[in-house]
Amino acid sequence: MITTITAFTQDPDDVEGAVSSLLDQLKVKPLKKHSVGIVSCFADFIGSGTWALLAEKLPFSLVGTTTLGASGPDGQGDVILILTVLTSDDVEFVTGLAVPVTGEDDAPFRAAYDKIAQTRQDRPSLMLSFAPLLIGVSADFFVESWDAITGGVPNFGALSVDHNPDYRESQTLYDGRAFRDGYAFVLCYGKLEPRFFIGGIPEEKAFREKGVITASRGNQLKEVNGISVADYLVSLGLEKDEKGVIQGINSYPFILDYNDGTQPVIRVMFAITPDGSAVCGGKMPEGSVLTVGALDAKEIQETTGKVLRQALDGREDRSLLIFSCVGRYFAQGFNTTGEMDLARQILDKTPFHMAYCGTEICPVYGKDNSLTNRSHNDTMVICVL
Image (cartoon, rainbow, N blue to C red; front, side, top):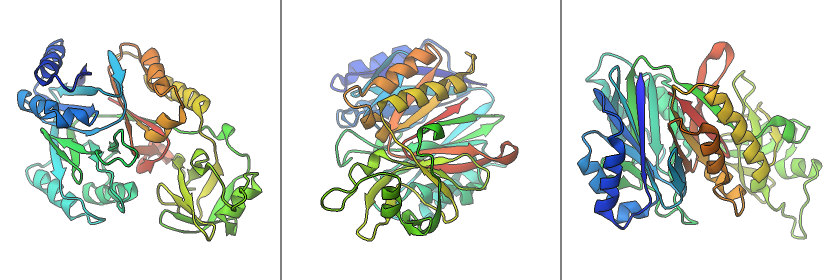
């Protein structure tokens, strides 16, 4: 059984006071035999030294990422540090760091994992991932690499972001240090049966027409139903401007069904190329079925409320780790705290840790309740412990 303790601070400048407050908040429950800390914070907490001092004062390992918004039962905001401690007598938490991650080369992952695996006889029951946001390195690469290394251990986590338009301060966190190119992770050993929930875009809110991917290469979607992506979007009613450009494509993500019996995932479009192809936020396998959806504040409220209630399921003896895409944050318009407000309202005093991220990593369910690790865009993902 895992007990969860949450704490927060909103003052990055008063280093001693912030850390003292966090430590006081953790005293509400005693620590058990094994503990680990999950941190989501505004980048200023790194520069001020708060993050390093916090790690120095705590007797267990800390991992996490920077973010532009985070929430817990007792506090939320943008300039905030949320700390969630997982503590247990029968589940052991072992942390690792793969660094440097400079390209799509899994050698740093294998080295970090092997360092832990060679000391153990058992296999982890869950992996928590805190990945860097890097140009030229995809979340699909992260997911597929760890699948091959761990043998498909359920993988849940997030890619870092921050408050800058170019995400130049987005970093992963590990034991008082911060990395632009580090992949921090937690391997959970013991009897643990987590449940996973995803909230994306309901199919009933999408265009009725479905398309089949007939040509693609990695995250480049070239053809749907035998025509270019641009022409396919126009056939659905989207219009080109006087320059022949379809505006606002980020607001029309794909609901992607791998056509293999697993839950669909969301893929965002970043750009339409001159040849009519779409650059997407993850791989777009040929033969998959897609539907074009729409993302706005109303849809976010509806899907967030639905998935949180599913995860809570009327029970209070559980805790939730929640990551929501930065695309959902921006799609809320001026009410950027709307999704966090709803989460606190629904979950009430149930322990939870929620943060915004660049891409979400979460298993999806398939036939016979089997799990397949996937990366997601424009999605809220939940791990129930």
